[in-house]
Image (cartoon, rainbow, N blue to C red; front, top):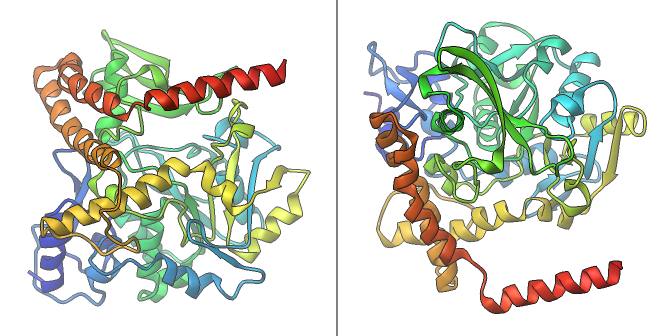
Length: 470
């Protein structure tokens, strides 16, 4: 086996830091192929035509979670520092402007997860002849068992079929091979680690560098295994092997933007059905508990896709969350995209400039877990002398005992969710999952509950607010 590939398999893959992006399998003559493992997560496997030939590009140099690829700030500096009026923030990376906003024209907002900005930006790139195709995630063809995969859209109608977030495993090996074999200009829509990986690849692969012109990043909480989608369908009566489709971000009228629903399609009692439920009413959807989370996500410090030309996500801020239609937080790093925003203000889009502090607040929970929490997880790995990737965050043990327990329990809940799901699947009964996880979740919730003093203070604040408003 090629030495670099062996090192990748013995470190990143063996220690469960693989994010399943497929970059290693996309390289010319790579002996690796991407498949879902028993946890419903993509990882590389050695194909039958395994060989010892040295690859032109080292798999270790492009893997987002290889030992020394903690290069988000370095990549951002190289690409964006020369932009006019660029600033730097430790959480957002380099940026020209930050916004909150939504799309006013057509159905971008109603069909999007939030304010519709991601697909609108991609549409502008197509309409302005800046790219020929958009690489993004869409519903898979009916001839496989996957719900979603990466595809390329070259029309606005095709692009809109890929609207909304997909909390589902996907990999890029085939679509990147297509880009290398087919001339054109492309934009890639993806989560932070995938964009970082393609940026690393573009530094060494001239064709990728020439053809992928723009990167549209998505704010990321963490990536889910396919058990997440299956569990939601199962709770609504569709067994895992009968689930045919899912909308993870179904907008519900007269509800806050963060109180969205899920829509599942599949076979129930021998009939094709479409079922909708508020997401918060389902058992596996608390993002703080991290069920079915990739372990690699516990060792990522990039929330806002710092290497992307523009990043879009949910504006989880009180002033925007009440609007059920959704509002995006937007971080612009590329002057061409900034000009697109300036040319369309007031007509096609509504945007308001945001401070870096507001951008941070919109994703504060994610930053706490991925910066403060990560420092403790790194410390634990080092104490146990276990392999882990280097990160920009320094290992630290300077946390309260309560915070340490919370971070430890979150990791434990995530790990146990895979075991619980397999047990439920073996017995064909989702109640087995609940029975397994219930005591663990109750223990976590009890430990995570605010102190009596803090609860009293919250009540006083609420009472004072009502008094002021009256």
